[in-house]
Structures are given as C-alpha cells and as structure tokens.
Length: 121
Image (cartoon, rainbow, N blue to C red; front, side, top):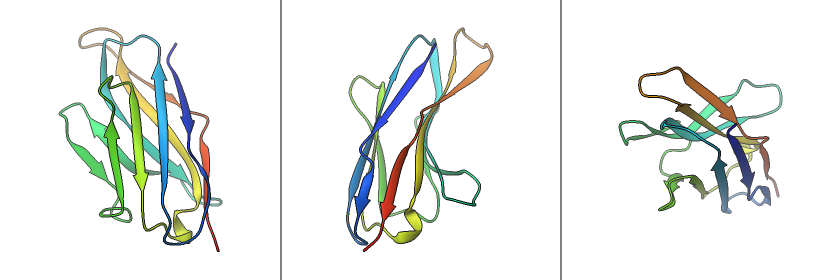
C-alpha cells in the first residue's frame, strides 16, 4: 500500500504564509503525478498544484504567483509553499499520488487524510 501523510496546516492571517509537507511511502514502479488538491466547505475538490510525469508543474490560476510546489531530493516528499494567503484559500488540503506498480500498468491513486488551512483575521 501507498500512504501519504500531510503536515503543516493551521490558522494564518490574510497575507501570511504556510508550508505544507506530504511524505509518501510504500511501493510503486513509477510516479505519474504528485501534488495537492483542496476542498472548501460546500465546494468541489479542486487541483492546487501538481508535478506530472513529464516533469512539468501545473497550478490552479487562483494560486499562480503565490504558491510553489517542490519536491525533496528523495522525491518522495512534496512541499507546498503558500504565500500571500487569502481567506478564499481556506480549505482542507489533500496530498495525492498517481502511480504505476509495473511498466505500462494501471495507474492507481492514493490520497492523504488532509490538513486544514484557515486564513482569517
């Protein structure tokens, strides 16, 4: 099994910063995508930022220029640096991983439990 453990959420004032971390463990042959989604109350889950298998990064338009996704040298930990936070960034942030267990095999996904980010004065 693949497990994802997030940390780093909390309460921050508008304009503040937070860093989220997600540590992935388990067995996989290759990573197809690794990144972050978020879900605010009463809203659908939305992509925040993701690394894709072709080594590119994609961001939601609403966070471009404010959030930065990165990976550690071990490549099994993904970070999300969030700056200039706004109340509308308030949500539960989930780490997710898409992976294959064999070359050309089925793509599986795994989700973390989520970490709450609240932006409020």
